[in-house]
Length: 68
Image (tube, rainbow, N blue to C red; front, top):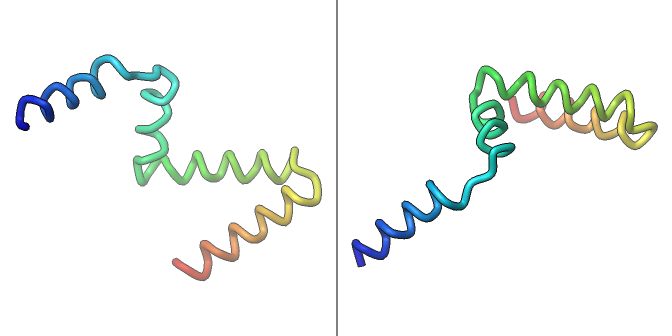
């Protein structure tokens, strides 16, 4: 069983990779940088999303204010 787990670990971490996600995920998961990614997404929604985009931004801000 240990050998199977080791082989699966090496398969997932060395062969099944995605360059885009390898660069994106540290930005998303870093608590300090994650806020900038969220802010960029909210700005994009607000500017490019029309009325639904602006409503999404407002709902997200309200949700963050409630849980924070």
